[in-house]
Length: 279
Length: 173
Image (cartoon, rainbow over all chains, first blue to last red):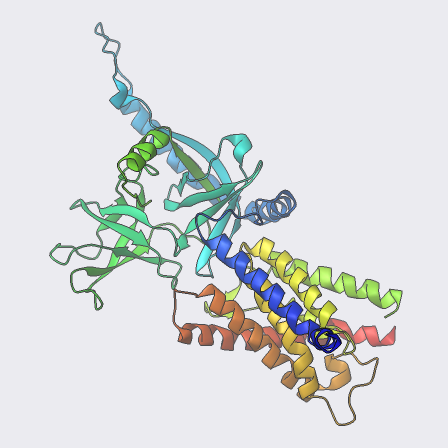
């Protein structure tokens, strides 16, 4: 018995090492599985605060650019609004539920971002206090950005589109052919459009937008344009489409967080009919 | 280790951590050469440090860096591995006659040749674990090797540079 204890004492460093390594691997796995609750991340208040201070300083230098983009977007929105303004009329038509607003938008600022790893995440400066919930979509005027992963009171952590775990239901705008956009972990300005059958006629320069099938994003948010068309070597039934992302992930600063107010109803319907839906 | 050394070591750890997290986080030369300058903390601890506290320090350090990187577990696993490997490696490359009790494995005390053979394998071990965890199920082994190779060279260069620029004065104290 004493021998065993002595032996264990002699290899105590190794035992500690194995124990801590297993703990670290457990953390990696639980952080990356969508079901596993992530306890430690940058939405924790001290880390969030420090990241915010850093973002305050860094983003000061790109304020002019951000301002210009916002002004352009404002002008576009105003123009659309002018077209929509109804003339006063004697007839009043009650709108049914098909016209009810299903999407709500909130503005937020990106305070933490990475783009060099194969699982990239964003940190936002809004949390559950501001009505952000896990599962909401994120985009900016350039295009799609990601999806909220978890929230704390003041901060939220989100999957960037540059995360190999995120699939976005999307379509080719001109032909309405559906597919899924997924990052392949290589270049931060390119992703792949999967599951497009080989018979589909498509060419470089076609625009890819969200399909609106997934209950997270409305239809028509831009994702990118096709930059390369090739047959898939592994599976001859599909095309290998490379998409040039329209969002510049190295410069993402102000974003919109979008909530589908009917998400729960749709989600429970899917669950009831036992369909697993991608996002 | 007297109190003065302790305080200066803690200050260096804090400083390196801050630099790593706020300035070097999104830096990657040509998309492959990352820099992990905070590994200098694990490299610079005295030779006489026992493995158990060393591993614990590396674990906590990696965890704090992970919180900011949003890569929970990856830095932790890699830094712990590197700390465990360090004591074995130190024994393997010990000069004839062994180390002196008060010796620090630093550039100015040990010379450039010894320091390179000490730091490069350790940093490479860190990089291999880190990028394997990062590329798990995504890229191939070649990608891991590619990134590890360039990252360890870049990191090592920066660590030597930091020591040349800032550590010389400490000898005078």
